[in-house]
Length: 181
Image 1: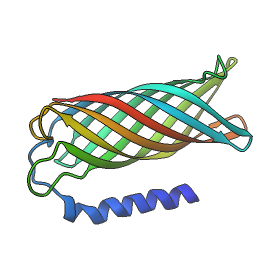
Image 2: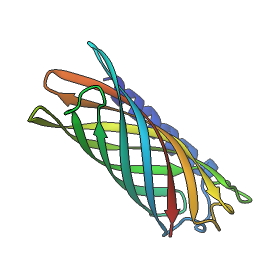
Image 3: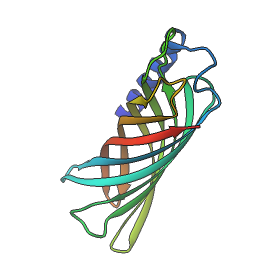
Image 4: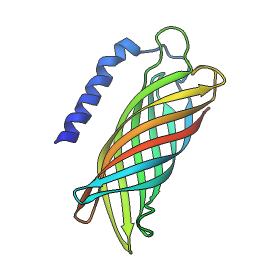
């Protein structure tokens, strides 16, 4: 129930911010983005927590100046458990808060979507589908968001994953680089 409330509040925030932060149809509108990233992840369950690292790639398409449809593919491996692995497919929508006047090399964003995770350990595999939400900031390199085609980003994501009787909360801190074309 708590995740639905948080997801609803994020959606409400996005909808209320659109008139304030809406940009004209220039800059990112119609462009694509490929993001490569790595993350540190803390997986928390009732029995404790473990940390793991992930690598991922995301393709995004800006449907207008602010809104980007994304599809991410993530691979995770837990260092504490040599054979615990996860493959994650993560479709999402991100809203970028572009300045209403002037240009900026720093662009914050919020997003929400789904996580389809396939977790396997010792030959046993299970899948689950959960909600995810995230917030981040992109720092464009060599110009602003209208002129630069590369950026580095830092992002926080939160979701849940099921495996056996475990329902784990997943907190991810992402860092990476992307190219916009």
